[in-house]
Length: 330
Ligand code: NDP
Ligand code: MG
Image 1 (cartoon, helix red, strand yellow):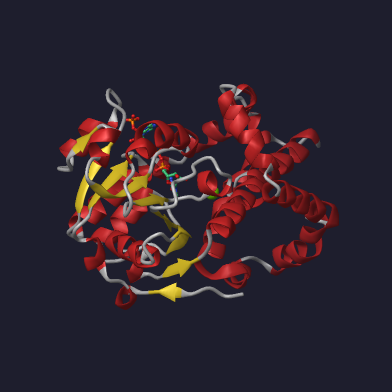
Image 2: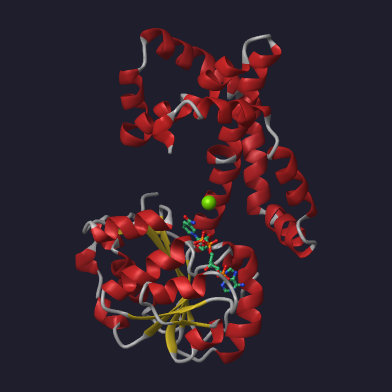
């Protein structure tokens, strides 16, 4: 099923022009949203933790900033742009008690809404605007007159105008210059989790580690294993990013292509696909969400232990030595 895509002509920024926008969080996304929305002519106030590092940064960038409560005071739209695990507590303690009919809650990722960690009252609009790129790129492209393709979704439409508001906000970010794709909170959340677990974060890091360790255990030099299984990944991914598998295959040798097409499916075989389906099923049935929510409530014992182990990888130790030879990386 293909999705609706919207452009600048489809957006009416005037529908948000009388609304103060509270941008909660001034990190990767928060800073980019606040600056782009301000430059697009909207009234913006940033809300962060008192005593945190970023309040002064927002003020130095010329954006009014205060506590979460101060930013939400009189706001027509409240954007949740700080780490997802912290959002439910802030929502329940500082935002929900003061919500008024007609206000708009906005997120940039659907996890907390989809899995019921934040349940806004029925009289407010709830929307998602999710740029498909990191905050610094959202900001840089905006300044160049371009934009990042973004997703929008309507979770709750109290006013009957929720989609209009989502499009106007996306327009303010510059996203309608590239194209805004309409999805649902469920689809965005489940595909995002699957991608990061099975492919782009979990899949790729485990693939690199498994390849590196296979060569090292077979007696090859770790430096060589690093170059072949980790360093050259970027070359290949860049080509795929620019023009898909067809462009990547234009730039590799026939020997590489033959090995790719005959051996690749043996590594990522039916067993792997079956486990991918299991991972997806646990995203769909809420098991992964419950595990991660409880892990956070327990102060992240498993996460912290794994992070400690992963901080001491042989692959990274060799990699650091090799990267020291690559002056262009600085
Ligand atoms: P960041 O980790 O960059 O957010 C850091 C900011 O949040 C800082 O300003 C910090 O302030 C503030 N902050 C932290 N805790 C709180 C709190 N309890 N109350 C108020 N402010 C707080 O977040 P991201 O930009 O990475 O992510 C924001 C949202 O955007 C998430 O929902 C994420 O899923 C989504 N998203 C992120 C993308 C990305 O590329 N990073 C891409 C698309 C969506 P201080 O430290 O000063 O207190
Ligand atoms: Mg993700």
